[in-house]
Image 1 (cartoon, rainbow, N blue to C red):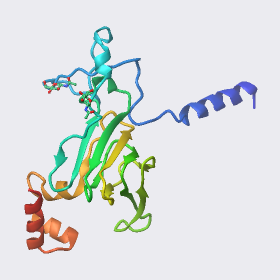
Image 2: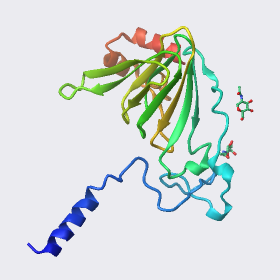
Image 3: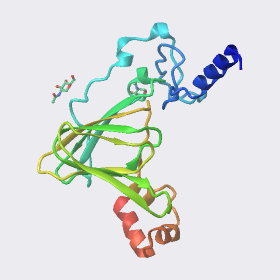
Image 4: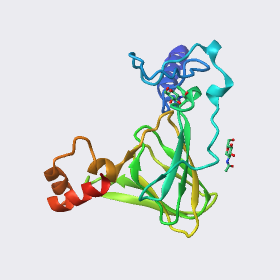
Length: 224
Ligand SMILES: *[C@@H]1O[C@H](CO)[C@@H](O)[C@H](O)[C@H]1NC(C)=O
Ligand SMILES: *[C@@H]1O[C@H](CO)[C@@H](O)[C@H](O)[C@H]1NC(C)=O
């Protein structure tokens, strides 16, 4: 085997096994500040970039993560997201952040982020948090990976997996979460199942949860 053949093979192997494939897709230019056009009739995977000469510092800046957003009634948690929708400079950068506050016994119900892994840091309080990993053998089962977290503790929720955060303590919990997506998305399991529009026919939910249709109707009423 010639030396050149060896080098070429090595180069091709290195290219295809490159670890540079991250969520989201990598930027192909220095900056790609999103155009805030809700009327756009052309859709791309991400947002259209504005002319780089028109970009300004404020496109890359947001303030207000020093306070929590408005609380979700019944759950005792408040969250605030900084993503491409309110910080247009994040477009194509594959990163975003959120702040969440939990009252005592407050819960962020089981949810997933379809496009991001989440790295959560506890700033104050005590939180019980976990994620579910599908069982390799039976798709009816899962493994729970959970921890009780205190200030300074960091926990990671792998992309797409269901997770929750619950305040076990007597004081409020404040957390910061970063995501490897400019737009991680969120699917809140209990409410999105119960209050879809239009509703899923109740036989599907009754059989799925092994409950009666009366119990399902009660569940739907609670979330409506
Ligand atoms: C949070 O930050 C904003 C903007 O910088 C500021 O106006 C506000 O007073 C701050 N609030 C608190 C409670 O620190
Ligand atoms: C984008 O436009 C909408 C609607 O005009 C507005 O509510 C929102 O604040 C804008 N977002 C940014 C980041 O400018």
